[in-house]
Length: 198
Image (cartoon, rainbow, N blue to C red):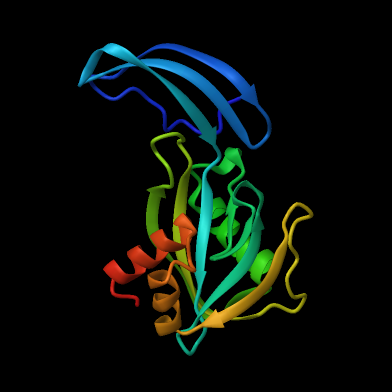
């Protein structure tokens, strides 16, 4: 199973071997040996393959940002983050499906949707942890947002404790104090700041 085709050999790179160690519907772990421009003798590496995902920064008409507080089992903690979710691999490079995924996560995890005339503004893509995995996330701002008629509809595996709006000043303070620790949320904030949205 391959989730996407981002792992193509660029000039100066060659895959010598690739052995699957583990796979489930969410991730694959491979041991690869690859030659690189700086390692022509080859390097052996553990690589985790993951589906691409969407991260959406929900913004109210007043300019406040919605965050969810979600349990994260790997770190044994609940943390504040923007809603996010994986893209079906069949639509990995389909702009319409990527946008649909972002709006779905906004609705399911936050219980909000775009207001009439609202926009879903793309902020580009980033790699969340390229030292170990190929997961890549598409960033969006959804603005302005309004509550959806059915409220939040999280998936069965999700444990979302609350959804709250924060002013940009509160949001910045939460980053400065280390209260916001999620890479997706930090990346979206950095991109919004660089693009003059915040």
